[in-house]
Length: 262
Ligand code: IPD
Ligand code: CA
Ligand code: CA
Image (cartoon, rainbow, N blue to C red; front, top):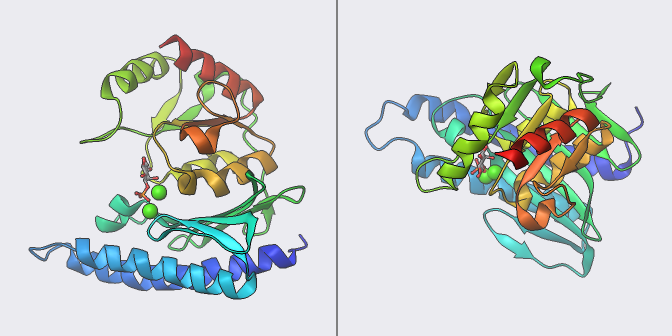
């Protein structure tokens, strides 16, 4: 695998932020037993990771614009290149000491996902993809899973919880999918859900009410791994609408049909 200069820059920034998150995660595990819990500590860790990404990427590519979960939009002189960043995806997991979270950095070029890095620093799993260059997990080329029947598939989903999303609609969708698949999962980190579709661990994934920083990097990964991604109407307005479905060509089509019927 030849790593392009762009990918080198992205990986260096993400690894640096990953080292900070891992240090803080160690502390969070200790804070579980304290009365106040680790909430304030975690939001500081989140902002610190974002600051590292912002500093490193601005240095390496001056002028590129940013859309970050914590700081919001920072327009550069080059608005056709935008870093779309979630410094900590899977905050609830992190907060509870569950080692399933990731840094997600996407590069959106002229409005379309161009490259992505998703890094789970605890597992040391680095997912990278750049348009036309393929998708990789720690230097291993990725392909989406080849399963052709929903009955054989493990499908991941987002789950609306307290104060979030449309619970009645989700329950209808869940009822429709539940009886048709081999397994259902909910990781709590949408970026990892997409990375795991790209790597074939999950056959498909759907979720509503996401933000572009949850998905920008993952979209590049799934597509470069040969997968299909769309919004839940089957169109390409994933980043605009905030809902997503991903899988191989067949599982994307069949799961989408099932969800539409719900
Ligand atoms: C969340 C995670 C989760 C998804 C939520 C997101 P955060 O991001 O990706 O899996 O279900 O909708 O907000 O808050 O942990 O960065
Ligand atoms: Ca997120
Ligand atoms: Ca986040």
